[in-house]
Image 1 (tube, rainbow, N blue to C red):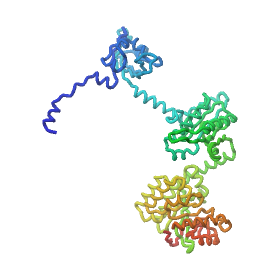
Image 2 (cartoon, rainbow, N blue to C red; image 1 turned 90 degrees about the vertical axis):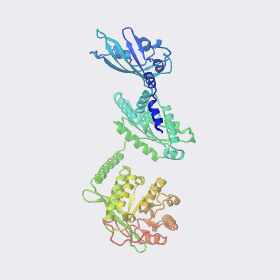
Image 3 (tube, rainbow, N blue to C red; image 1 turned 45 degrees about the horizontal axis):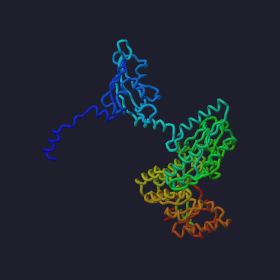
Image 4 (tube, rainbow, N blue to C red; image 1 turned 30 degrees about the vertical axis):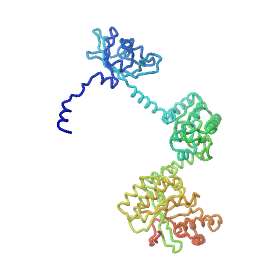
Length: 573
């Protein structure tokens, strides 16, 4: 830009800013109200901001009040003339919010007004005049109303959200206790929701869920309540509902969902639901107990297949089991916190030379008395209670420490399905290997066949990440999931470990022999070494050797020990 152009820009004055234009742009208008004669003087932009036809319609307080919506709880008149604060010489501030109908009563157009001003007393102390600013706040009001709605209701369905649903349940239980009536709480889950999501996309799946909610809502009585209990579940509060009533209600809900397909933009989708319910207060005295028992009943319903209902019933055996689980959970958490997770090592040996190829590191919990509990006694519990991820982290830490301490050969560890998608676990492994990259080739990570197939794409990323770090990977419990071998091969693993349940009776089971031989031949044809677990005797080892199995593991070749064997490790790759 030239110097002359710059001088011209500086010399040219900006257009004069007019207060009227600014106030109109932000939706504000000033006023002065003479209370003695009830006249109101407005800023010259009043008609533009308020949208009224003429100033005559708002020239007095009485005329202005005639445009207020009747449902308003307060007004400027109330704030000024009915307030309890006295003017001590500086005026009294007021701020009120109300709705205005600029086209008069009975019209749809509505303005939400924030009225901020100050009134001043006349000589006898009563309000004499006031002035202030009216501000149009429709957008803010709508935001506030939406936030208020979302604080109580679910956005997708329009019904109660979880906190408000549970609050309603609590109120219903208090009412039932007071008047000695009964009610029921049901949890409804859309069957195969994940499959619907994967097949059609989340927008269609959300539409299906909302349609299910509407169909069930249509069958409820006016005193009943419905809300979104969780992502794919609804919660129902059924008033005056006993054991017989809840069975009838559940079948009504099933029919409402099942009898007609749900029309979506992707086509018709057939939907069923599983339902678990509990009658109250018979089987629960608090909302927490009601939720726990209904979820327990839902789990039982799902075990029966799609489209079933189960009502919670007290079981002394089940109560004892839950108490035992709670005690074991506390013990496992204590063992993790007190670092009482220990490792045991079992060799995986070459089937011919019987030299160790690697050792499998098995987690064990050391009891306060010194005894050690094996993984078969706590891993399944840890998975049910959501603690297995913590166990996997601790085992990884211990195994990497053992590998770093000396030449122990290669070690393998088992990871759960949860760990396959755990970025923190991968991050911890990566950071440890960054300082000791030589440890990577000595670490083998075993994932179960069922965990891999549950989310093949995620498992493939996990395996690729481990290979990129330099680690090897094995499919554990091969054959237990009866999965497509083609699917498993996309994982490009380094070993297959045949599930021990097919090995322990191998000499005596013709079916197991056929199955194991086929698995061994499949692994051999793709050049992937096959390991057989739970090998107890030489007769079994001989059969496996004849079918091309490369390695064996079990009591025949080594029990679980506190330290990995000192024998030189043969190459496995």
